[in-house]
Length: 410
Picture: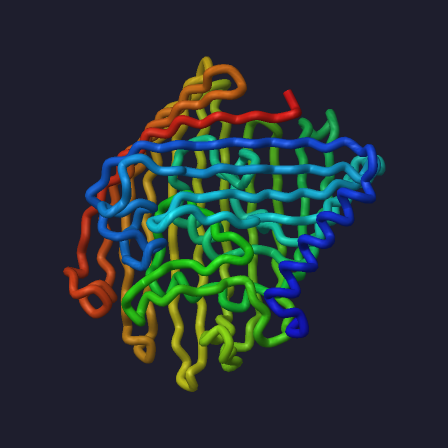
C-alpha cells in the first residue's frame, strides 16, 4: 500500500473514472446536482476548519452569505449489476472555494439469490456507521449540522479499499425483518485521529475531500493536515451488523480498527501513523407515520508513539427527535462529547454539549428551505496554550439555507 503516492492515487482514480465511463458506451447515467446557499449569523470563534478551535462550521469572521455546498453526483451503470459512483463537491471556505472528490467507488450488486443479496464495493467511500445520514452525498435530512460522531467521520474517516456485504431479506413469516453483515479492508487512512487529538469534536456538515489539506492554523498546534495516506503498509478493517424492521426500527453496530503502527513516522507528511479504534451503535425508531427517534453513540481511542505513548480517548452520544408532515420537518437534537488524553499527552481535555433546532420545508422535488439554530458550550484545554483564550466558550450559529436540486431520476 505504501507504494502508491498521493499524486499516483489521484491520477489512478481519475483515469479509472474516465476509462469506466468510456467503456460504458450507451449505458445509463444518473446525474444529481445541487447547490446550497446560506445566510448565517454567529458569535462563534474561528472555526477549526479555518485553523481555530470553534465548534461550529462558521466563525464570527465568516461572511454573512456563504456557499454551503455545490455538489455533483454521478452513477454510471456498467451493465445490469455494476455501477460507478462519483461524488464531488465545492465548499465555501474563509479564503474562497474548495473543490474535491468525497467518494469514488465501483459497486457490484448481483441479483438476489433466494432470501440473500450480496454487494461488493471497491474504491473510496464511507463505512456504514450512521443511521442519521440517509440522503445522497452523505447528508442527513434532519439538520444542517451533523452530530459530533458523524462530523468526525466526515472529517477523518474514509474506506479506501473494498467492502463486502451480505443481506438477508427475510420474508412474510418473519414480519419482513432484514439483517446484514458488512466487512471492509482498507488502507490510506493512517492519519485518522490527528484532528480529533488536535482540536476535539465539533458539529458541522463539512466533509473532507480525498485530496485536500484540512485547516489553516497559524498556531503550530493547529497545523493543516493531509488525512488519506498510507504510512506503515498495514491494512485496516471494520465489521458492521445491521438489523431492521423496514419503516419501523433499525439497529446498527460498527467496529473499526485501522491497525496503524503508531511508531511509524512520515517525514513527507510530518505526521505519525495514528492507531485508531472505535465502536459505534445507532438506533432508529419510526413512531407512527410522522415521528422519528434517533440515538447514536461512538467511542474509542487514538494513539501515537513519539517514543512515549500519547493516547486520546473519545466518547460522544446524541439523541434526535424529528416530526415530518406534508413536506415540512421539525427536528431537535442533543449532543455531548468528550476527549481525554493520558498524562504523557498532557492530560488535555475537551468537553462539549450542543443543542440543535432545525426546520425544513420542501417545495416540490427541487427546492428546499432549511433553518437551524445550533448552540454549543465547550471547554478545551488547548485554547489558552494555542490561542491565548479562555478554555471555556459558548457559541451560537444561526443558518438559513436555500437548496436547489436537479436530478435525472424523478
